[in-house]
Amino acid sequence: MTLVQTDTASSADWRRLERRGTVNRAGFLSAIILFLTIMSVPVLLPYLWLLVKSLTLSDDAVSRLVLWRTSAIAGVAYLGAIALALLADRLLKPALSWAVLGIVIVILVAIFLAPHMTIDNYRFLWERDIAGTATTRMDLMPSIWAALGSSVVFAVSQTVIVTLVATPAAYALSRFAFAVRESFLRGLLMLHAFPALALTVAIFIQLHYMGLLNNLTGVVLVMSALELPFAIFVLKSFFDNVPWDIEMSAVTDGATRSQAFRMIVLPQIRGGLIAVATFTFLRGWEEYVFVQTLLIDKSQMTMSLYLFFVAQDNMGADYGMIAAVGIIYLLPVLLLYTFTQKYITQTSFGGIKG
Image (tube, rainbow, N blue to C red; front, side, top):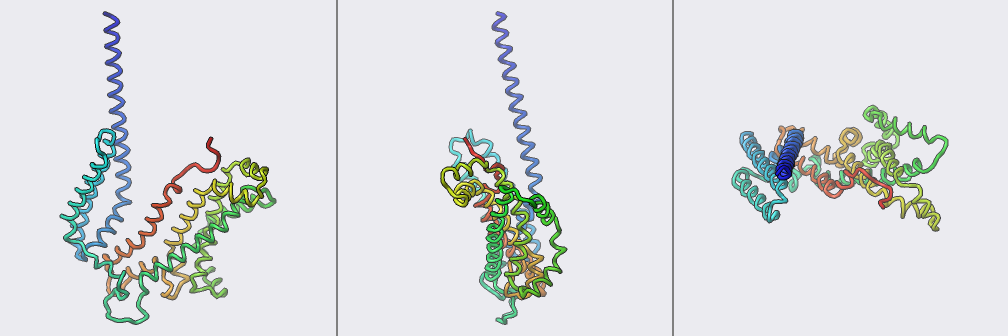
């Protein structure tokens, strides 16, 4: 009888501990989700405003109405997604549940938002005369496509130069010991920490005497030089985490030092190369100060300058069009992050998994 009572009491204790653990996990998970939600709202709200304003009429009352309705629908979608994620193990058909949530959101958008939406704010995509002056003078702003093209050329050129120069430099600093190696590293650190804006006037004068002022090539070279210290430091850390024995084994097996570098070492730091290339591209894509200072001719206008001049229109700021240009400005960045986020967010690299 005593043994039976002991087993019953032990079973009750285990059930009580299980319930307590479940409650603690639920409370901890709820606190984490609440904290992340509160921290994310101030960051995401401006982007939500940008999207809403770009698709609504210029009337402020309509914009506020649509913004509140969009926020409510986004809240429903967010809570629904959290609920489905937490209940994923208990759902018989998770895909069907997600489809139902998507249909509900589409219906809410069609009922409460669609009647107030317009694409007129995106007229700069097919009209160069965005101010409606009914003129074809060449002193008008360049088309959005020309600005996009200039930005792509600028960012891609900077990315290629920085990656090609930083990779062998970082490899040399990681693998070879030479007399001024430590001094060189300290110099790179100082260059990276130095405020680049202090060099604006000096760079302007230098490019003037070099014949590169008001030339996209000059701005590319300037930004590439400013981004190199950061890229070299990042890539050096990736090279440091590739074991020396891997490279020496390839050399022992008959590979040249160049072949070992290309075929053994570089694949090990692929994530680092992609991360550096991504950040360099984004740095060039968003650059404004040096582009505004060193490019005087509007024909070479980049997207950052295009957005600035749209916002500074003499006829008055059209916030709907400004928001629409901002959306177009963001799209390449979102696409780039979609394809490279797994490399950017990784925290381990190099070495052998065995």
